Image (cartoon, rainbow, N blue to C red; front, side):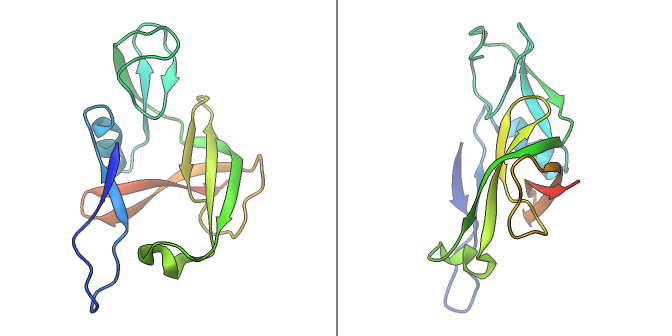
Length: 144
């Protein structure tokens, strides 16, 4: 998966953040996120969850997968606080946290824990979605 900026910023407009550019493997994840649904790729052969999405199961090497709803619950596994300098699109948000969340399903995702400066390791969180542009929403987290 890669990212692109949405539109062009000029001196008169605000810098725009990068947004996901889905590929064949990640498109179902991002389509669900746009609907404010969290889904995970799961191996159709052995049942292992995998994130980020990819064509082959790292557990059994099967190329078959299905998409299933995720619990949307997890815990802060690790985190950092970002300070300037940052990309212009993020300058107004600094300082902000970036956290690795371990979902109840056992996979990890990166996002922000909203509404607090610094999360605590092990803090319970639940998914919320941030709409960044038409048809693009990012999974974020809030304390439970």
